Image 1: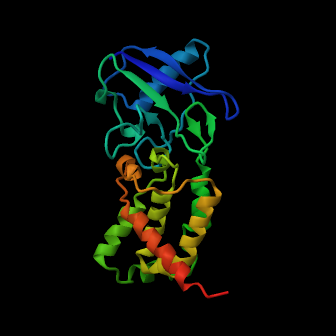
Image 2 (image 1 turned 90 degrees about the vertical axis):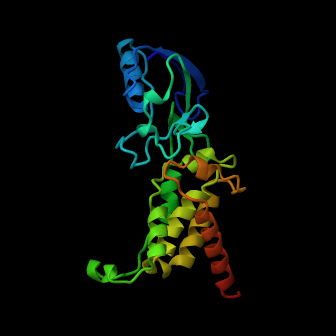
Image 3 (image 1 turned 180 degrees about the vertical axis):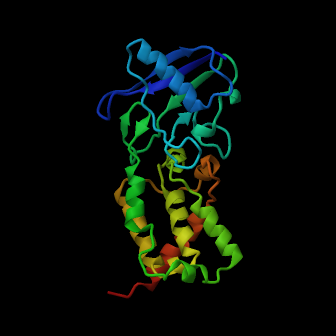
Length: 250
């Protein structure tokens, strides 16, 4: 298949970027989107041109590294699909495909399609973990957990931290990401000990890092490649409000 690519090229964070058009012919329909970019880069290198920089790692839809904005959608327009799981057979012969990086104040561009998503790591460092002693593995597994809560915790934990929710949100909000990370612990007894501190620290850090506010458009849920539900945002808000109410008067 033959395609036309319009790819965002930007040398670094301080330089001015622009969409550059490339013509790519005889692309295998069974190739993944990232493999198609590999083919393009091979051709650019042979011509002595600078290859397109883009993030990738496992290419199995697990790591969340392959964040690209494809034809106006994070990871492309297909539901529950990461960029590395997107194949060229989903496109038509002769189609023009526009590829851009994540657009968010919290995700500054490094080069071309690569952005700095370390802000998500800083949110985890603020409280997305359990530090209390929960005993050995047999003891932890022996704690009875309601099946419904266990399923909800596992659903929240399926977040891969790709940042598609931030890129999809008109405000650049990280509420779905933080909500998922708060929920995966808050729903389990092991995580409830630090629940109040966790949610307050993560929300405060989110504001510090320049993420926007949530205006309930649900774009984050619609574009999330793992189908994380906005009910996790509601749970996080309840946790945050409860933590604030429980604070002692100063």
